[in-house]
Length: 111
Image 1 (tube, rainbow, N blue to C red):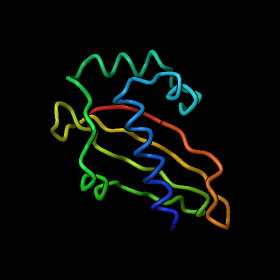
Image 2 (cartoon, rainbow, N blue to C red):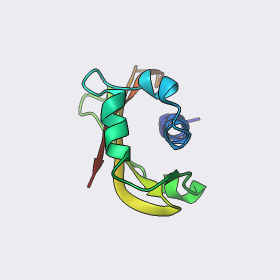
Image 3 (cartoon, rainbow, N blue to C red):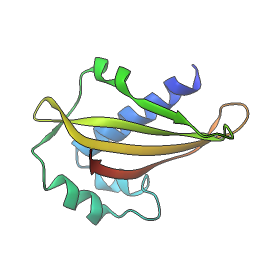
Image 4 (spheres, rainbow, N blue to C red):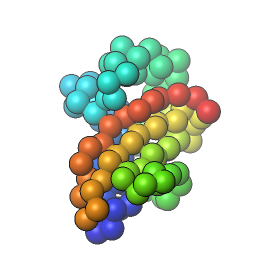
């Protein structure tokens, strides 16, 4: 499995946690600057988060760090079974063997 497939798996898992409102799991995936309250506050401005179709994950925007130590990913979440402008931003650090060292939610915002 290549690094982007590994990252996609973690992103899908995170989206499922958000849809289920599993804030215990989400809490452990937040950057230091982001809180559960921040996530809840943003989600309150939208309809119901829904699981995107698998094809939606082909639209993940991967941005590799210049020094190749990780990636930033952006993914439009689905609200009421439709793609929305609510964007999940995640970051991951990797080692030289493409092992994921960390994966966390950096932001949840409207584009």
